[in-house]
Image (cartoon, rainbow, N blue to C red; front, side, top):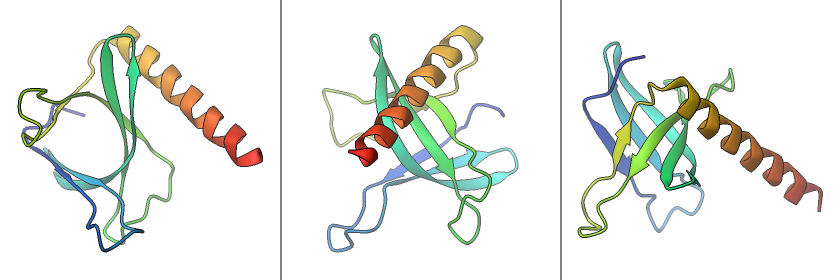
Length: 111
């Protein structure tokens, strides 16, 4: 997977409570719409977990993509920036943190 040139994060329509926030990624093979699973931090870095969707807005294989994530604190209306993680150690740390997030979600569902 290569770095993306363009990302658009779409806020859910306030009138449609079930609609999720999505990100549109421009990849070499075309545009991919992804559902935002969560935005999380590891140390001082923020990350975003994305669920790529097919033409039916489904994800049947459970694939999740993790990217670096940043917002401009001086301009909250500016689109966030997603960064491809090319460092294996950084990706492993972000992946482990996402796994912990999933474990916590499962634990919360049990309670």
